[in-house]
Length: 291
Ligand code: MN
Image (cartoon, rainbow, N blue to C red; front, top):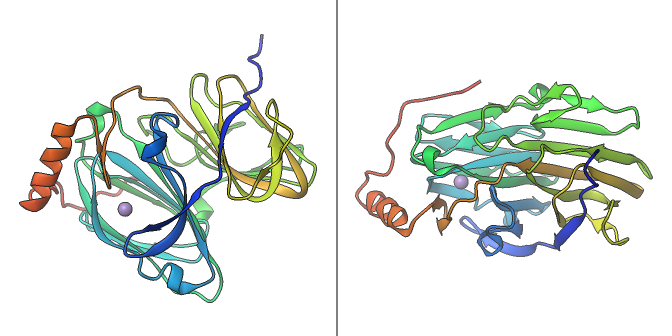
């Protein structure tokens, strides 16, 4: 007996948001949607051909209790952090950063003549990992495998397993799946996230429908949250369909959220703010790079 296909439970068009020092982006979901996307907290999509929309960037700011995942589609984002890491996230690259007990970093989009575009996803940490040692993974595009299916779909596997291919990001507490899927015009795609995992798709380009949902296609920019079930099945429209497909094991823990810090209780938030004010926030400054 196979599980019925997952249907789209809710759709989120995203809302224009000003973030960082003045970056215009589109926020798909955030603290208003807790706990719908558990274990995921936030998805931002940035994309512009006008440097004034992004050059202010995200100067030095803290994080605690979460992982931030930056996936650059076009352009470059320079970064640096209190672990001693610094570099540039280029087109097709992924930075998977575990803030653990505390990190202070900056994320600065670089001026380009073409488009600057990408995503930031926040993944929650379980209570037992929130004060862990921060860690950082930088993956360049060539380290991310791409699978071509018999149906002609092209799937980049950042995390999780698609077919026989496991993505390079491993050992994350919520066992995430992170796929960048391209379905050719009128093509079909199917994937079953691990049982019990929360799953959503964010339409990047083109449009398509997901089985079991209403007939209206999900257009570029929209996020579809799937209900429980087995596989996700997508069918692309005339222009093909490119989307992120993300899944993870829900934590079912209380969420206490203050800006870039996400803990389980208000007491823990108060501690974080007190430590920030007294320069005791960052517990680990040595460079740690996980491969
Ligand atoms: Mn950040």
